[in-house]
Amino acid sequence: MRPLYHYAPAANWLSDPNGLVWQDGEWHLFYQYNPFGEDWGHMSWGHAVSRDLVTWQELPVALAEEDGTMIFSGSAVIDHQGSAGFGKGAMVAVYTGARTDRAHQFQSIAASTDRGRTFTKFTGNPVLDLQMADFRDPNVFWHGPSGRWIMSVVLSEENRAQLYASVDLRHWDLLSDIGRDGAPGHLWECPWMVELPVEGTDETRWLFKVDVLSGAAGQASPWRVGHFDGRRFVPETGWAVGDHGPDFYAAIGWNAAPDAEGRPVWIGWAGNHAYQKYLEPQGWRGAMTLPRRVSLRRDESGYALVQEVEPACRALFGKAEATSLCDGCIPLPSAALLSFPAGKDWSFRIEDDHGRSIECALSGGRLTVRRHDPVTPQLEHRAAMEAGKGPVELWLDAGSLEVFANRGGAVLTLQHRLAGEAWALRGEGACSVAYPAAMA
Image (cartoon, rainbow, N blue to C red):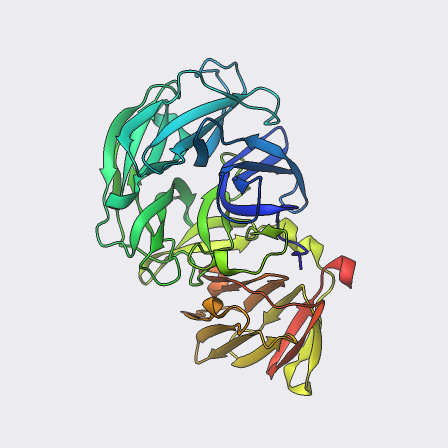
């Protein structure tokens, strides 16, 4: 069953978001995509656009595998000054070219002068090549103070990142390294370095985030806060977890278009390479999380990463209705927004006719979520996090559950395979429930 308010392709495999960029009122979502089936392979860039980050139009494949080279993850920028030689305002994709024999990965560029509808690969590719098998996922942004493009890119097997600089997106100079330094897990992917506002102040800090493919609780999305002087990232904090669930991966942010508070918006893949291949075929596989506005908040540990669902997404839902979970079994549509008040314990369970279930409970300030799936036992999982202050929101859709607590400072993402148009809801406590307007 397809999600109602999360992005998923009409067919085939989807994973990492790529090339997130805003131009002329359009939010571009590129992503890892297999044009030929719903298993991982033949990696290319799928493409969708939106005017509001809520309603998406899927477009043809933007960058396709060819000549034995797949198109792995990367980023995109708008070259307003035409520094790369493709013309002022060109959209330039910076991506990893990956040989299909897994022996060689390198960084390449392609340009579009028609708002991302068609791209031409640069004849001088690759633009950065260390002759390595695991060197990938370039994330590029314009750094105004130094007047140049900055790239973060990972040497995956070595669990470290490098920073490069360029004035033309074609020639790159090494600036510095970012080392593992106690980060959890193994095999770094999908770095993102960005300047974020600190809530309630006029200050900003730089965030550096990676993903780890194995060896961490869930996938962790480890991040830390620090300073960036145009050459080096100097950490100010240790590593923290970006999402407490198992299904938040490869998240990166859109270049440009922060909101009035200076918050960029990012999005992740609601999936996990450890078990995605075990999901039953249905013609398509993979969906994105909801887009989230990102900022920092000072707390007792130093900083919290704060994530708020893109406000426009709330407009999808009708008026919330108070519900008592103690009233017995309540039919629940497959898409809903549940909000639980602060300071009160509660629990609930939703299940389908195949024995699949999700159990959520708040007790003593600790929130636990358990996914049970006898049909696909690889999906069995239990996750937990401290709920902190404020209400707890659960954004439920066909295929996923996103939990926001501690005023956005604690987040948990979980995909699921509950089937059917409605599920049974049982529990203890009270909440308010809102449904997408089309279902109200």
